[in-house]
Length: 205
Image (tube, rainbow, N blue to C red; front, side, top):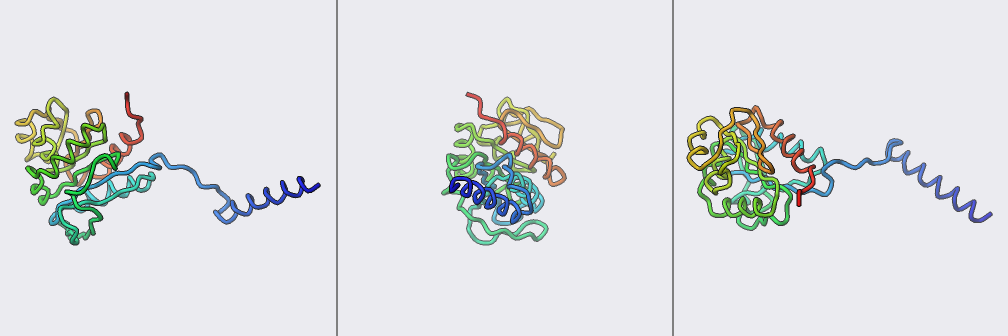
């Protein structure tokens, strides 16, 4: 009799719990447990290229950290403000599943930046998803990570990417293995989706 009562009590507790959650148990999201770091410039990052991929990744359950060369509030080209959570020079790719460089004219400060190149190379060596949008693919190109890979960027960066061995793609988003690039703010959401798709795929041995 006591065991029956116990089962009834447990069942009631489960039902009440579901009722408190609107009658539906929480469902797992495709990127639960995944972590990404989005690197922005301290000034003149492109607003949409941070906001839209960040929203897509978080909606799918990915934990996102914003990193910068400074912890001061960063200001986008259109006035958006972002408070970085981590210093670029202290970020380690091993702590994340994806490393993404946000564009905007300010991203040029990282074109030849040792910390940016080091993080990108660590990510590539560790099989992480590596992304860049707008002019930021030049960071990957100059770090030697786009040689022989299909990639796109803001049109002005075509010569720079090809000079460093990339195979230019005219599409708004290009993916070659674990490397995802995009050409600008109009592709920001699609870029976020492509990053999410890459993150959702299991690593190949």
